[in-house]
Amino acid sequence: MPSVRAVFPPRSTRPAWRRLPALLALVLVAALGVVGCGGEGGPSPADGPTLAARQGADGVQVFAVSGLPSMTFSASELVAKPGTIRVDFSVPTGSAPHNFVIPRIPDAHTRIVSAGSSQSVTFTVTQPGDYQIVCTIHANMTATLKIT
Image (cartoon, rainbow, N blue to C red):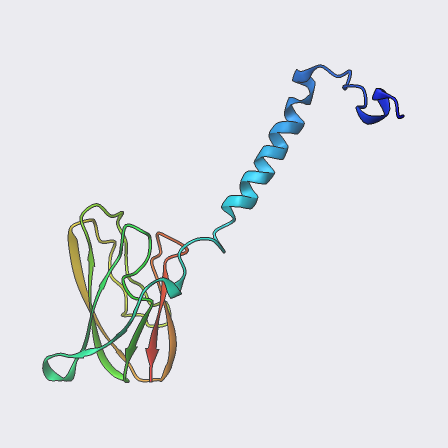
């Protein structure tokens, strides 16, 4: 039969306070692994529905989009034809401030919109393709404008 010492090795002779930095480093590494660096685990573009533009006055394509308390846009994809587009962007009461920015389209951006406020932005897109939409305050808050 094995001795008790073979199954349970002797405890470290280092005082507990000397092992504390190593323990804290281990906890920090584990916490970063759970939280991540913002690339995964947060809201993704697939979190919301796809919206088709509704026809507004003078042929302008219109979307109503909100920046939500969940740090997502109310739609993950906006679908439109080439032409003039208006986005009515709002932030509901109780949400953090957000903005609506399409980096590849210089005129497609709002200022930072506070909770309970809204702003509209009108711009023109002539080339079909996918255009990323972002909130510049919240790195994981993205959507896509799909021009077909």
